Image (cartoon, rainbow, N blue to C red):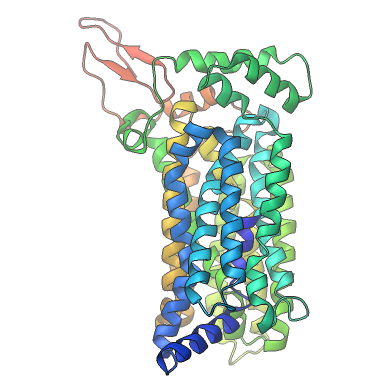
Length: 481
């Protein structure tokens, strides 16, 4: 929820924050900021959140190995309390730097949680609910965006005097998170496979599943532990060099990059600007934005409750195709709205379509796929890789979109349209359905796609991506696939 809130919170008070920067600059140097420098400074304020997220995602592997999934989430919540304090007092101290640093710290927290929360949920979820729980983070991302849009209304915190409080509200859900996390145990899969704590894993399973007999699930985890007994947790570098999981790694990279380069962050960061360019009256823009946020929550719920019935692939392919079509529609609307004023409402419908398409599939499925495509030895590294690419592209879009929009106008959305359609095509051709499959079964599906990995030489051991070691003795008649 905090990730979604921080994505959208800078949209409504953009004018007030720019005015604060300009006034502070005048106090310090005796003259206001030039328009280009003001745009650059505000773009940095928006996009520094993603740089912090990139830093957080790079720390995930180390943090989850040392503190566990649950422990990492507890410690990361403290970062938000610090960031909220900095942003709350930034105007009183006439320090724009405090806003930028606070945004960076909230990004650091989101970078950690955006990887650890799906990892935690993926490991505690029973097989038949893995898709449902895997998409729950996307629901709360939507709720976070919606809360930011509602609180940004002029009747609430959307006024000039309230914008520091508007940014600092993040401290409230962070405090709630710290209190509630004590009610939940550590991931049983982590306890058993990485800490070899059978008793702790058994107790955690009983609490999560609400049953005293958890032997079947425990045996499945022990089988995975046995297959990983000769394999250490791999680093990102080792993951990239491991040819046996090349398809999985490539799929995680493509989907995470595509999710950010789809243009969804540009829509969230600059919704008000987009509606203004489409010709929506200024007084109606905040309420139009809140309406899109409500549609977003509904679309996320639809995706969450249908993923186990429809599967992962249909949702993500349909989502990217819908987004690509609506992005092309926005281009047409912005080009025609001067001649055809009613096109402004079609532009609103296209924005709604982009957000709905994203929330039904691409919002949560990539994180769920990362949890399902890799087993314990590779999963943390895969989350670091996917998260790093996610945040790097998030920063790129947040920083360059205002300049891209100034230079190319409506045609800037066609770039995002092409990305969406290419990612949908890749998923259709390469990524298999993972619904109701165990981690070992999914590994076998990808094992059939091993032309990316050259045959092993005789006498050498080959490491399959899921910990099973296969050997080929010199002179043996058996060959590896």
